[in-house]
Image (cartoon, rainbow, N blue to C red):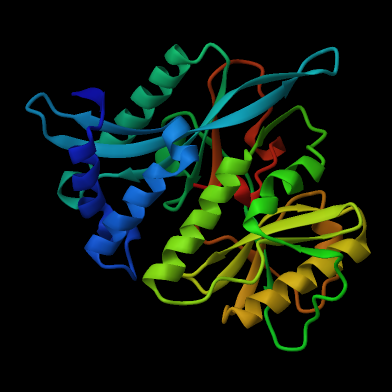
Length: 318
């Protein structure tokens, strides 16, 4: 068996094969349309690869995708060195081929290829929906994963923020945000955030439902970005940089108000240490063990901190 990059026709075939895992509530053809549009997005054109594990006779045994991320590692002098990290997604083995270690072999070969081809390589990251054991076998280590669910209800106000943000404001919003003061972190580009908004646009069109009125908000020096997950009736907070408890409350109340107006049931915020004390005091906030999207990290070079010490904002998810 060997590792290859998929051709366009092979990508289309994998779209149809993987619909059973990730396609609902779209039809097979709608899911293929979704995937074609996402692959055409600037972020994917720049740094996405579709990998196949092939048998010697050409049969596809397993597949996955990788996406490029900028990452930053702090050195002994306190300065950060920029590098390349890679998010792994859509790991799939057909049911009839499972139980033979194909996914683990694929993960090992992809990591080895990323390490070989990336002199500035830092880490491979994935968000597991099947727990940790499968990927531990390939050197991945998980980080704790908790969500905060906040109500989307009538009566919440958007008047406490200074401005609502549109898609064109994403670049400026990211520039306003403080980067983590930690030994190692990945940071999303404006194109990656817009990729989340492209998913929102696609589902809004295919499911014929309205998009939220804004993709974020700002109050003072504090900023939040979010996107609709139409499949689940949620507004997910992609990035949150709150400079005070009052700002955090205003931004999250605004998210709840806009979620309600868009017909969504709740706001979901990934737990991060810098916002945890404030979120606990938001009325109606509930802490829930995350069901899926478990962050896991495999170093591509020595000297990286342990996965639990790495921040994983929702914007990094693929």
